[in-house]
Image 1 (tube, rainbow, N blue to C red):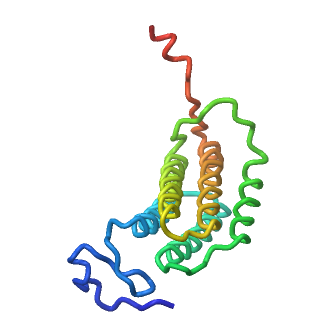
Image 2 (cartoon, rainbow, N blue to C red):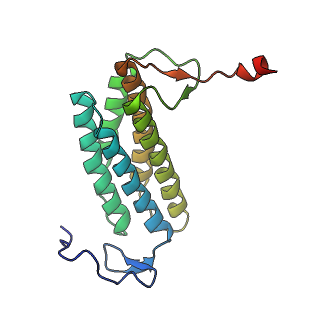
Image 3 (cartoon, one colour):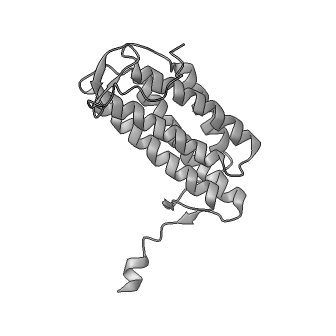
Length: 186
């Protein structure tokens, strides 16, 4: 377990660097810090979603995901550390199938929305996608385990499906993209 913070400000980052979990220091805008910072942002967005009224089964699932996202942030913060494994990805895939199977197939794109919880879920999904991109960027010049990228990819898919479920549960329903609207406006 890492160090407990008893003093929040240390002043060690005043020079534009930050400490990684292995004790090394890097620039605050390094690809590694950007990657784990975006994972933290995604985790916070899931927390904002959980501030809404969501079904208990989804709350339990997303709370588990928050713990795993914290683990993933630690993995990215400590070069060479592994915290996310294939079983975590398999669990996401099972949940994805569980929630997606009863939904009708999509024939059109969905606009983000469909009630407050669904909209927050869409926002969390897009932040997870950005975290995935940041991890790919990091992987171009530093070691990133493939499980980290795969986990984020599956999580964004799961959040998309959960946004559909939440939109339907709220009574707002899904908002379909009207691709023909431009033709009618002319």
